[in-house]
Amino acid sequence: MKIDSIVKEEFWRSIGAIYWISFIIIGILIMNGYLPVPLFYIFPLALIPTVAHFLVMVWYRRKEDLADPNPASILRHALRSGEYGEGEKKQRRAVVEKAVDAVLIAVILLIYLYASLASSISQAFWLPVLVVIGILLARIVFIDGGERRFTLARSVVFYAVASVILLLRYLVLGYPALPLLQAIVLVGIASFPILYFW
Image (cartoon, rainbow, N blue to C red):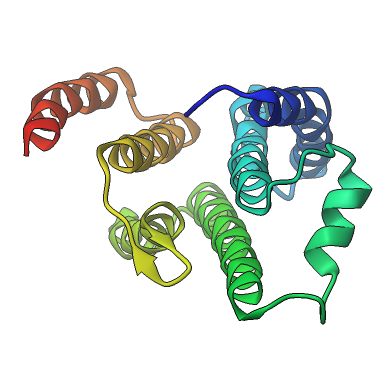
């Protein structure tokens, strides 16, 4: 990802505001018993909406060429209708779809983790949950405006986000995460050079 003024602005907004808002909301959910995980999981859980916000905002601002970092201007631009041609309406729809998919991933993951901790559901349910999350994540990363775009950079982003989701599950459920982390690194080292040359 090219580091320009948009990336810098959204990075500082995500770290300075979105992360701490997510931190407080998740903290309240944990302290009130709605999310039965240890309190120190607030830190990694708050990263999920933070990263989703950062990626969506950078993508949208670059796509729409929005130099103004004011959230009100960005929201007004996103909600404005009637002045757009067919192509611009398509882009707006694509942004909304990506945002909905990101929210669905977060909600499905949180529901699964909550059910696993509160009700001790069978871990066989992880496979269909993983498939659904994988499909939604693939739509976010590889599809733009209905067109499939497979690149090495997008593959790396997909692999990194999927790895974080897997590690988060292991940490929350109390499984040893080190073997999984080693496997993720080994698979990445083995597969991405092949993808790069291919």
